[in-house]
Length: 311
Length: 277
Image 1 (spheres, each protein chain N blue to C red):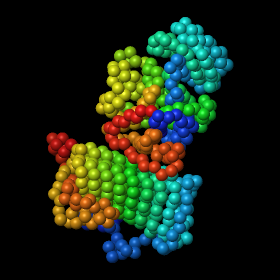
Image 2: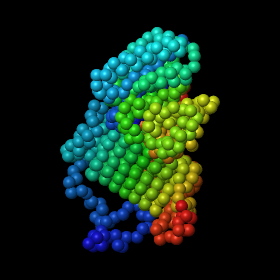
Image 3: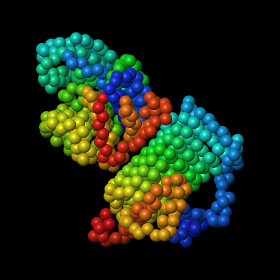
């Protein structure tokens, strides 16, 4: 049981960071282990924003040496970025282990990501022109406060509160997942995927990378694989409802779209509110009501239903 | 010992005829049937309160305290889609929610008449024993899970697994239902005025389902049946009671019942088992 939420404003920006924090706060009872946000700001044409971590949070409690290692890893990242031709214009650290770089780069993103992740302990959470992917242990208020999300303005966002069932409680297994190596694509999921290992083997054989043992990561990799083959987001979602077994509801966000898919058993909850200027979806209505206190008309999408909205 | 108890409960003579409610007490005494610790309430004594800043527990305790004071009509404003609102009411009561409820809304109730002006989440009125619940907008999945009696009405669309494990009573839906509606239904009646999703009445043991629109697919052991005159009369009366009688009448409704193939599943030959599933 996890909680997922998505919000998209049509044609305008809003205080999406605070709104998503409020939605995930209302869903805290569905999963207290970790909280994640994928928020989409105004896309920049010139540069990328990269969120990455150089250690897990629990690693930092394992001795003094780790602090030096974290510094060394950061320097290695800087060196490699310079070597590959990316020029960092802004470097900020939200915590000692999680960093945010803004950089300009004209080359192949896959090569950059590969070079970065080759460094021990370094894992890219996201790369995007508008996407900022933030995930950490703790509830929505903890994570939002720690990473300063309260003032983030953007068009759309997805979020997740996790109750760990399939893998460890760490940042690696927290949602949302970035669809490596595609910029600006992120996935959140609620459910269990029963043909995870079969599908994972298939995708690994095609050269895709998995960083965790969490079944939800499959959906991010699956989406990346389908987009690579030239499918649209909507086609990818439709195919996933047929090809992936288990009970699931998941959202995919791209730089200007938000999509949802529900399994053919309709076993996982989802409530949808749609109006001319905003669409809000969440595991429970209570999350939607946390940003719309007035009376609104909501409904449950049916089994196998797929929808895509544009910002 | 077990036999004595089942005899005492009247189960040895009980016959499964698909009637809407099992009665273990004298029909004549039904009118007077109240719980020993039920509150004396007066329907004309009306009160209302705003639940905007109250938790579900505080709201439920407040409803109980008001019933204790003899209020028979209670209006709850701004329930804010909270979970488990108005649960466990074993009393006569008119209860109005002006707004939407979350999960397990008015679950495990026996007796009250509830009207909800908004939407309800998953498992509305699960395990209801008696009374009426009317939802004006849409409902989530598991609407009326395992209800044993009473009337449960949703005027909008409902989600998947409506009336799962239904053991009595009536579920009326004005719009469409999702997949697996009437799953493992054991008794009672369900009416869907709109379309039904995949696997309608899957593994149902008994009971009746009426569908006004199309059915995507029937589940295991659910078969079409012929409408009888008492069926039509019942359908007309029930739908009219809640203002849901379609203008074109009820002739387009179709009836679905259990094929009763699963009844003796364990005693079937292996080859026959395959045919059932």
